[in-house]
Length: 584
Image 1 (spheres, rainbow, N blue to C red):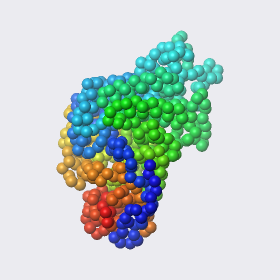
Image 2: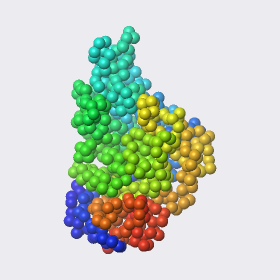
Image 3: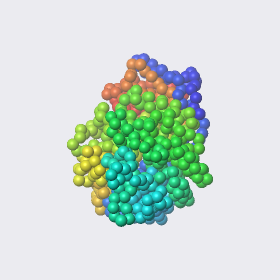
Image 4: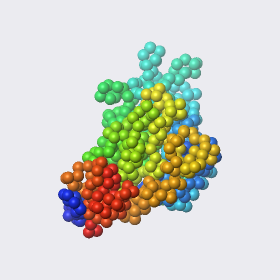
């Protein structure tokens, strides 16, 4: 456990000009545990948008396997793959019809085994995305439930209930779908008349499992063992906070304005964060601990406050959980300092690592978000052609700086495919191409997530920028991506790709993931966030003008002109730097 220490135990750095940077109390001591997952860097692959080996326009497992050597040059510890299971693809694979297979869109089970073994030979673990809150309405278990009578064992696998009011025409409660509309869909009875309702937190094609049924628990234990036996390095647990619903599924007042919608961050929501979750996670941890290589469990647990989130990674629970508070923080010094300090304090109480993340498949990419000065986007929403467009140069500069600063923090980190190329969203994607259920269920009121899911570019002068040999893409790519392509960036020492490579190599060499944290403060520089991690100083300038650097030996800069400015003791606007602390 990390405990506060006297700041005098860490040598203070001095400013090159102006008031000195003052080293404050150590908030987080070096990690005593050395397990790989305490400092891991995990790279997320969205399979349909990574690499297409067949020309179908859809990325696949063989395409991933072929590019594993390139991923290994980044220096990541593991790859998390979004679902590649059999699915009707109503929600891009998060509607699973078979948890122990591979959708023909992506290949075969043999392709999955080859991918896992090839990655292992490169020292990379493969983390499987499990979706336990709900399945597809095409799953055999749900089909059996539809065919069975009310009150049957088959229907007890899900949340079936009678309606109320005349003819049962009122849904069982007032809960809504997170994708818009009612959370309940009515099905016909055996005679064809309107019958019971089933609950779906997301799309109507995604019925929620009833986790109070032991048969559901057994179904997923079998699934975990299936993939662990195949060599998987762990699991990312989708919507982990929603698996259990409060007993009786009572009506809920929802938002302060009375809107009856389930929705984070309301702590009393009866469909989120129920205490029964923890006995399931304890059982899953027991299963993972029976396998070699320390398979990891990471929760997508969208709960607040951070002190509550720490319960999910207490001893015997998950190894990691996503830090959504950090992900949603704007380009603001005080907000970032607060969430970093609060995160470390909360997770240190249970001796768990904090994980840091800036982009994933459910949020607008950070190169886009940081180009929208002062505009906040809700999780799950993107930008369309009719919205204010980001300043792409500003967004990229800030994205590179934010990433470098993040990788200098103690704990684990998650990267989303393409961010190492500096990609932003496709913000001018036309509505006709959109496939996100969020967009479709709200009749376009919400833009949805398609913009951050566009196939990534590889070769600047190839069809589909090298994503597909035929030029086919399941979503169209922007016309201006040639300069972002991997082949171009590999040859440019100042590219975003090479900044990521340099940062990850130095992070490992310096042991920053297992390190400590104390804040540096310069009262004359209110827009500068600086920390000390071991012998490394990590500085982020959130202002629009250069600022004095602390004293120390320059190691790495987010901006290509960083070393030139540093020669004059300065850090450029919207940029970050790592230095070896003076006297270290």
